[in-house]
Image (cartoon, rainbow, N blue to C red):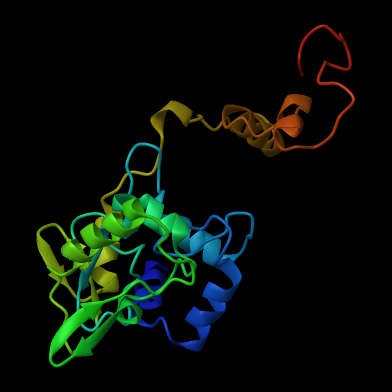
Length: 234
């Protein structure tokens, strides 16, 4: 399923990618892969694959690296393409001022007489010397990027090697990751009913719908006290 994240970066103009962007873009979404956490579904499951376990993470974002071309598949503020961090982290004030958060690199430069000229394309103008100075710093940084006429290509990093994404390569890495948290291993007792085993397992994972747990899930209750003793939190 990770391949869909990879394809999303390499096929931003495809119908399905534009559909995902239309649903998950906006609000406080500040990621190179758009996701509104409150919207459940298959896309949320795919994006959250980076959090495989509490002990070992498989950070998909760090594995997808860019070979910069013309900038038509590279997000100006959110992708890592000029330096080792996204521009939104380097210039947060400019990013706050930006009206089009998910603009592409190709939308922020023109080619004039064979040279690349960068411009501020937001509908919000630079109003003071501080903002103008920060934009000058940003231009100084992005000028070091090697803009080409060929399309951008997103590649997969495996160890020290960077190459095209292959399902077999990722599968081999995932097979060597232990996703079991040993602090939450429960011995299955065959001499008690299965439903009791399942209940004990949910207790270990803290997944029982107690009053306190329901309150955390923002379910309105008159009280969190135990209905039997009324002395402690349920």
